[in-house]
Image (cartoon, rainbow, N blue to C red):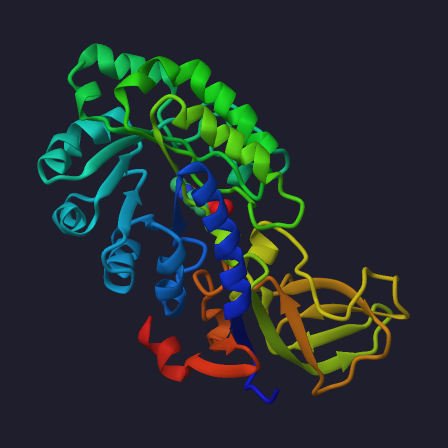
Length: 376
Ligand SMILES: *Cc1c(COP(=O)(O)O)cnc(C)c1O
């Protein structure tokens, strides 16, 4: 495999096997699953995704447009913490579901969205944290700007009881890379707070963060959670991002230089800061093929990127043999939150994107100097 590095490789079979798992959940429960484009917007795969899922959800106008153009005819949902007045008309011509974050946003836009035929929802905050450590990924953390709390909901309805009539559904999104036990806890909190309004609703959206396609994920428990809502006559939506493209992509890099220091370092042609930003932001240590934990195999290296950022470090990895310049390294699980987040800091090139179909690697996108220059 002689591909120009760095490059992302997206594996069609892996995407499809994830989609089959998600489709199984839909078939057994009658729920509707959407792609959260935030995690994976590689629209080369939208026709395949549209074969299995019901559509997509967007964080704003551009993602909504992408769904409209590349998954035509499928459901197109949108949520934003605050919509821009200038975007609203276009949003209502291309989206079929819109979810507001606050009673104010609902009162500003809800009536108009309804008149234009959209199904209207409100994102609520069940105020039940189920994750530790990743505060930036916890929309239930104290002071969160995401979702309407019970108190805010009740106060808003007191001021304007008509707002309830605008709502077709309630939405919550509180999870991140979690299993269905956390969903169950969240659903209990959601029902305890907002259950009394469910008889007026048509649908409930469980958001994303469900790691459904991860080996060991408890799918029967997820399906019981869905069943609790369908038993109340509600359509259930799930909008996973990661689960659609989990373990379906690679980032191929080349070792440029080995530094034989006390702590040996290898500089690679991919950057954590530019090409795998969640490594630094989240943070996490991405899996690397053929490697072990530091010290596990005879030769341990710290892998760093070619930028001037001291902290542009992917992590510490061990190998059976010494690394050499020119050697290729393959990071796994690089389809999600990678292409959508990469950047050209330090004038770094954007990785090309290949699509793997069987044993064939098809070049889908290639980037160059103009992509760096053009965005500044
Ligand atoms: C991020 C997000 C998702 C997708 O989350 P994943 O962790 O990628 O599954 C879905 N819905 C909303 C509202 C989100 O913010």
